[in-house]
Image (cartoon, rainbow over all chains, first blue to last red; front, side):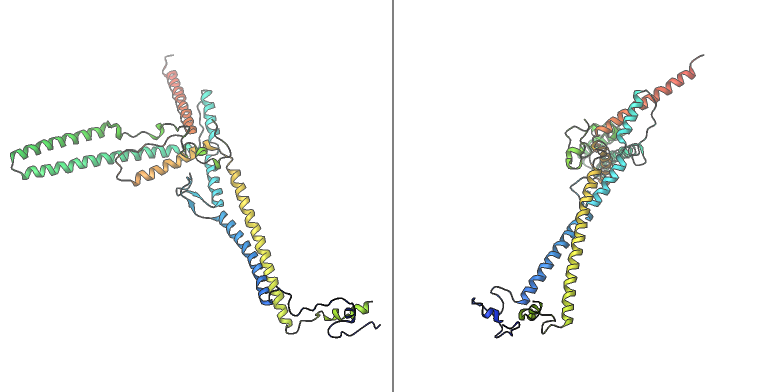
Length: 244
Length: 138
């Protein structure tokens, strides 16, 4: 038997002599896609993987660097709400910590000095700094007094307008009965104006009395305000619970 | 035996050169395109990993920062911000018909106010005592 046989009819001798059924497929196996579609599917698979990677990059970067603010969430640093991006939230919290750190120790030192009946010279920037609580309380009191003065000005201004109108009518009318009515009205208005001016001078109207910010009532234990119980308002932001 | 394999018609049928109709240039373009896509995918996966890591790192950093200084000190800072907000709001509202009420004081600030009031009383009494000593007859 020769070592090398030329294929006859496309098949080597060994296969032709094997007595086994020979199945010859012509073209592609059944179900196989044509080369162009197959290549396109392969490319789609690669591109979908790449898209997943890009989506992960985009979403993660947005979660970190999102510059917008959530107006529904209170922030003691930003007036327009808490930042949404993690990087800005870290920055916000870092500022909070810088401002508020040492406050508990500060009050403990002042209390210790009080206990020893010793004059305390302790300072904390958040309390008595240039834009600390004390300065803002003074500014708040000034603002409140300004509002009070504006309300009195408006009330007295209204009375002055009505008074000048009544006087103008009095000058124009000749009817004695009407003149008498106007005289009475003017007298009432003058009296009211005097009362308002006096009330303003001695601050006698309780509804227009400014409560100093330093004398405001203390927060209740169940208050939901973030400046009263921030750990109740936003428990997710405080790993440390309030000291009772 | 080796000869048999080398001369095997099936082995001979395997393409050792570009199949007819495909040039070397086309093969190089195919290889380059595949390498490009693979590199893009690898770069995408690497940057994706870095971006996800950044998220976790920032979250851990935030959680670490939230451990201190605690809700009591935070409340005082928030009170200061609330005072500032109210001052701005009150100043902007020119038509108010009632005086505003100040925000309630947080517990720690109340403690600070009390401690400072006691300190002021101590300073006052120290002054009175020293004045009394000076003005007292020998």
